[in-house]
Structures are given as structure tokens and as C-alpha cells.
Image (cartoon, rainbow, N blue to C red; front, side, top):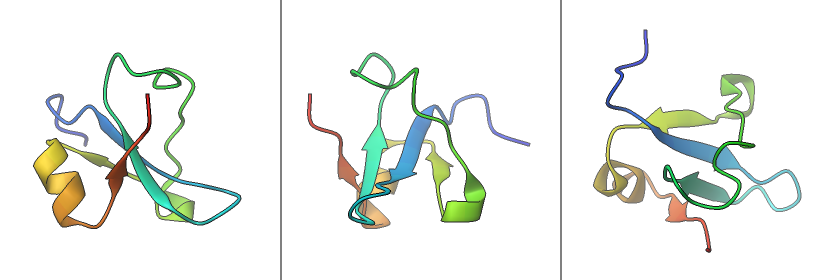
Length: 59
């Protein structure tokens, strides 16, 4: 079960394979769907996402 505090979406770009994370309030956050089949995942903090090699989505 997802920790309710883990609201950061780790998304993999279909075009480039780049790993990008989205935080609540960012553009496209609500449209981003996480599919673990593609290696996408949830993070509990931006530090956790960066440590795993993901970059923040551009505004």
C-alpha cells in the first residue's frame, strides 16, 4: 500500500526513457499516471527521488 505521504510521482518519459519526478502543484502533475510496469514509482521526498537518479520536471 502507498504511504499517504508519498505524493511525488516518478514518471519515465516514453520518448527518451528519462526519469522525471513531479511534485503536487506542478504542471501535468494531475495528468501523470504511475505505471510500475514501466519502472515508474512514487517517492516520499524530493531528496529520495534525486538520490534514486530522477530529475525534477521543468515548470
